[in-house]
Amino acid sequence: MNSELDIKDRSFQFAVRVMKLCQFLEKQHGTPRTLANQLLRAGTSIGANIEEAQAGQSKADFTAKMSIARKEARETLYWLRLLGASEIVPTSQLQDLNKEADELVRILTAIVKTAQLGK
Image (cartoon, rainbow, N blue to C red; front, side):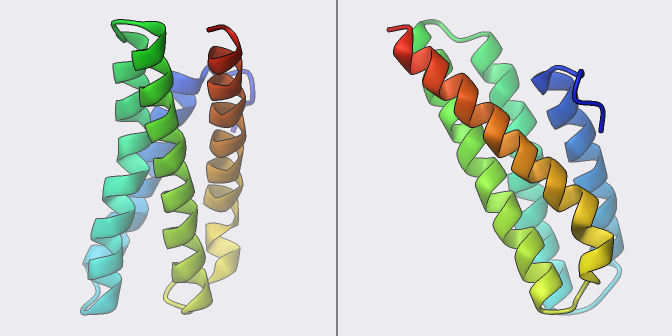
């Protein structure tokens, strides 16, 4: 992914990629479908919370929403790791998504820290 894209665009593009993976997982039976639901919720929630933060009513509201986005990004990393470790999806196919989720966590951590210092 292009590191020059802003966090809103990156999180949106990430959500699209997560949705495509979940569409693949939904076609399988059992555990993959259950994990797809968890991954879909967490992976698409990142961008939704970033959008909400942009319209925050206060600095505290902005910081809280960005913190939630960071938590969702971390949860997404968990589900991706689980999919790879359980061999439901080859880890090689998850590598780019894992990398982007990790970068989103790092960016959101920096945003939250900056916002907290600005109080």
